[in-house]
Length: 343
Image 1 (tube, rainbow, N blue to C red):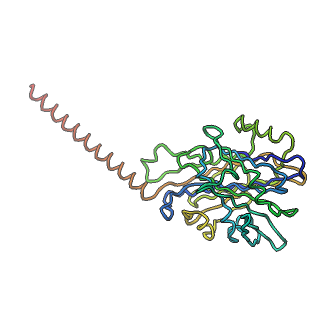
Image 2: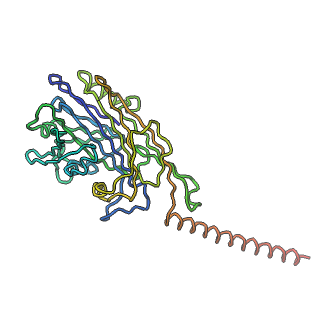
Image 3: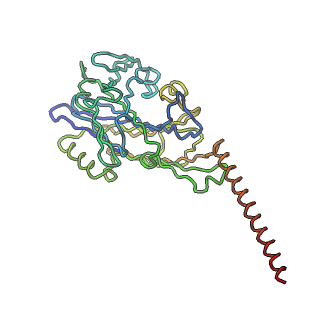
């Protein structure tokens, strides 16, 4: 995937921080969720802008087919101090203003950032603030517009930052873009099996992006580039999945607290989820060009449904074996009688 900005050439230089949170909730096959809502994995994308008025647009490319109805604004969740503090790891007070609507996060030293609350058009984010377009058969192009940037910057004071956070629900039938699953071919013949999942997260690696996206990035950044100063990648997955390999050392990991995160997700979260956090911070005066992280998980798949399926197949094979044995026995007896009758 990729994130880049279109900058205004006559304004002070801006900079960009990006945060990615991949929630593997559907990895727990026994978790049914609540309120009758289907359990789905999702990716959250956070964009922190310094000198936001120097930016015309923030562009995001996702290597998956995403509809407007599968994208949510996370701003109202950040109005809760427990959530905001959990995301930014800072002591924060949250204030929601009405005109224009936004959430201000404040530390004892001042404003930490302004969180933009997107306008809605019915149940989806208004296209005037977030443009959503299919880039190709397997990709989606999002653009946070100038109207959204100007809205969150109303009454802007020098030094303040603007933050946008979007949640993208992933297609449960899509095994390939963010989470790949390798299931053993003999899993139906066992009461439990070892399943492999892996996440190959690549960000702003031009050689892995579609050619049209690579050309678009080069065109948008030809005159002025907005440098990325921090990249953070976090993944949360059920505790029954074991981290088998990681291409880079994680920054930290922990057991996910049930509160407030159970209310952060409409379906709730399974008891016991593990969080791993990777990050890169640019050295002073430098920028980050790209980021990649390969994560391999091993999960022991078993449970009531798996055992019932295994016993059903074993019983069916037993019946088939007995039927074949009966047929063969009858055939042998018939053949025996036929031989002696001929004599």
